[in-house]
Length: 141
Image (cartoon, rainbow, N blue to C red; front, top):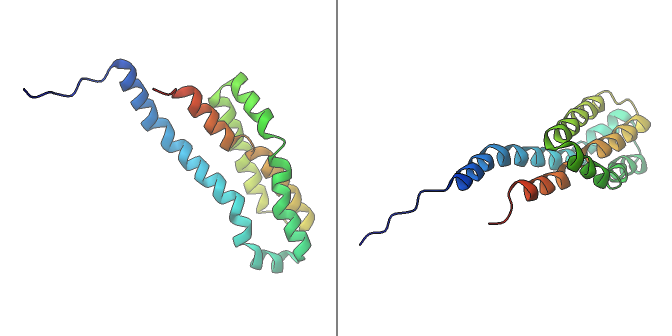
């Protein structure tokens, strides 16, 4: 006798629907965040010449991102738990976008370092927040 697959339960359908709507967006955000972290390396040659950066100033600008990123990961995730994913990710994406736009107006080493620091602060909660959100929304089966 042939066995037919069971009809998915309401919970399974809801999880599947949420998964296919939410996870692709979070994946795209994570990919852009990764590209944003490493893009300064691609721009080094031309940017150093245009802004007149020394190797030390460029290295500080590249590394200062993580000085802002690391200490603000936990507070950002605490906000995620308190205010919810929509507000937290919205705040992160808006501030991150404004800092990225502000990077276009950099005129020297100091402003580049300041913008990279702010970018680290604003982007800090995205990657750990995605993991935290995914863990809470999609519990293990």
